[in-house]
Image 1 (cartoon, helix red, strand yellow):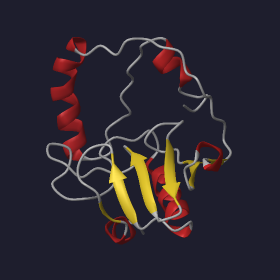
Image 2: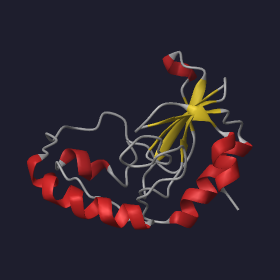
Image 3: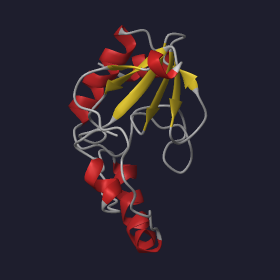
Image 4: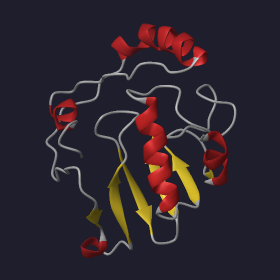
Amino acid sequence: MHRKEKDWLEKSLMPLPPAVTLWGRIFAKIMAMFMPLVHVPATNVDVVLGDEEVSLTEYGIPGRIIPTPGHSIGSVSVLLETGDAFVGDLAMNAFPLRLSPGLPIFAEDLQEVKKSWHLLLAKGAKTVYPAHGKPFPADAIRRALP
């Protein structure tokens, strides 16, 4: 977990980035009613990441962890040599968050989201695996970027 978000897990915090779309603002109000019912137990972080890429080859995984801030300050993605990109909330593809693949509806910095996507695409992302929804071709993100 990125060092900038380590306390979130170790202190059982659940911050929600600001909404960056109209639907995000509406959905945030709905979520606010249910958040008190959600509890993530605190636990220690075993591996603390910084702002540099980390190879996963020593773990037998042909890929790397890439810092991809934007949704949150410590967002990271896993990019495999196959072009499979596991991006967490850097993209979304499931109702009720989105009706089709695209950028997140919540982000601390939407411009950073876009920079992170340009980086992932330049590094060979081909298939996106978001935290919410089914995988989709990276071209859907490419079309959403300026």
